[in-house]
Structure formats: structure tokens, C-alpha cells
Image 1 (tube, rainbow, N blue to C red):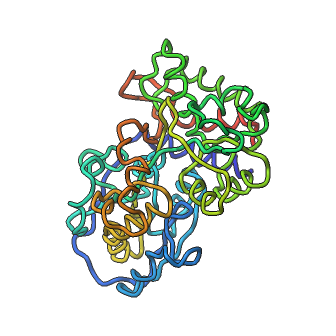
Image 2: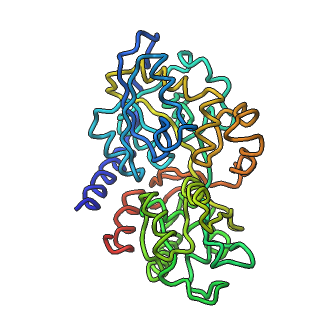
Image 3: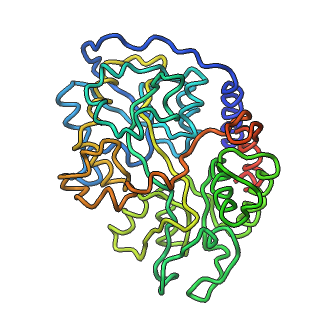
Length: 386
């Protein structure tokens, strides 16, 4: 039932996406904080030192502004869209496959960058990025970004790291002499269709895929065929980072698309885990802090957006999650991230990453493409409604 509700929500918003988005007026001037701030966020994105005292970028903000922060963790972009559609939140850390749906559905409002003094410090590659900028109007503040990595068990890949996404898309014998069947996972979200399309870009160039989020009918069907093979291999479709961590520790899982967050936590526990950026490249996410259209605490929200652009916060978030800061100054002098952290997390791989975005019917690369609501219904069909 939960899957069906998510599907209906995504379908409604994908239909809204075809309509033009009308910008309301952004806040003109910053006032006194309202004392509260509620945020929908990815796991690990907003820490107050409860897991590790070294990672706390909430307590100081609360003390300085008087804005008490509450966080609702979401496991998928579709869940974020559903929560913002329901309302009652001020901000969301939306990835590119959700952000434009929120704009089109009028769930978020334009922001006044003049009220965010540190806006000019944002990486120029992100300031006007298409996943938060519509007709030169900004609908959010860049947070952090990074790739979807291939996480693997180093005991299963003893001699060398896997070079290709093939280990999760095709049945094969792994270096430990055992089949990968039942020992791999896949992401539990329709946007995973793009990972299959990215794989096909390298292995079936005759399909002519130029953008894994812009697929014609033939390209889309080929991607679904890849996913149907994967369905025979995957032991679980994951969306909860902590459950995936447990599966790698206790359930014999040895390879999966993942986030640096899981990799870092497993390494911290001295587990035999590593990650790689495969030869086909990878999809990724550039997340934006977006303000709800009906936010009741907009002043606290603007204060938070400014707070998150400080080099200290940017560096701490990136060190904790394994991301790349949206503020390049965070790459130097941060004790937790270290000077090598940005390069290690993918700062120089920006051009190699295919960033998540919402698939639409009218696309730039080839005119007519398969829209997101099809991705939702067909992906559920592929994975068997799990």
C-alpha cells in the first residue's frame, strides 16, 4: 500500500510538471526568527552530535538564532515530495529528481539570494544549476553533492576493486569464486532506471542514449530489460541506509550502488568495505535546501540557509556524509574533512557525474521521452511491488 501511495503521489506531481510554474514573490527582508524550524532531510544531513560529538552543526545555530530545529528523515526523493505535498515543513534537502517537481507543484517558493550573504561563495558550477533554477529564478540554496558509488566487500574482491557496474547488473562469478546472485542490492527508487541507462550508454552505444534521464521508448525498454535481469540477482532493494549497512555486515551482501555515507560508517566500524567510481561513470545528486511555499518560519529558514553555507558547516557535512561541499572554501582547513577530502569525495569528477533530474515527456536531447510517472509504475512492476 505504501508503494501504491508513493506511486500516486509521484504520478500527480509528474502531471503537474507539465504545467508552467508560476513564481510567487520571495521574502523581501529578513525579520526576527520565529523560534522553530522543521526540515525534511536525507539521513545524516543534519547532525547535532548525538551520533558523534565531533559532528554537530545544529546546536550552535540554535543558540545563536533561537530557532529550534526539528528534522524528519526521508528515505527517498518520492517520500520527500510526498511530505512536502502534505505540508507542515519549512525546508527540504531535495535532490534533482525531486526539486523541479516541487517547483512545478508549487510546493516551494523562490528565494531572495540578497538575504543570503554567503551566496556569492557558492561554487559557480552550482549557483545557476538547472535543478534549482527555473527561468533565472532560484528555488533553493545548494547544500552538498556527490556520486552514487559502487560499494563492495573487499573480501569478495580480494585482488582488485570491481571496475564496472556489471557486478550488479549481470550474473557473474566474483573473484571469491562465488556467484553474485543473491549477494547484490539495488536502489529502491524509480530513478534507478537511470543507472541502467547509464550502464547501457557504455555497453550498447548503438542505442544512442545521450542522457540517462532522457530516454525514448526503445532506450527505456532496454533499460527495463537490464533491470529485469538485476531482479534475478538482487537480495534486496534498499532505501534505508542503516538497513543496507546491516545487510553488508550480516546478510552476505557484497556489492551495491550506495552513498558515501554508508561506506564511511562501515569503514569506521572496521568492516571490509570500500567503494569505487566505475568505468561507466555514475549518476549522482546535487541537493538543494528549498523553502516550502507555505513555510510558517521563513526567517529561521533563511538563517539556516545562510548557516549551511559557512565553510565550517559545509566541511563538516561533507566529512560526515562523504559529499563534496557547495562552497569550495570548505575544502581547505577543515579539521574533519581534511585538505584531501574534497578530491577524495569527487570534487574533480563533477563533469563525469550524471546528476539526478526528473524525467519529463518533452526533453532536450531528443524531443519526446518517457516521463517520470511511467518510470514509477514500471519500476514497481520490475521489482515486484517490494
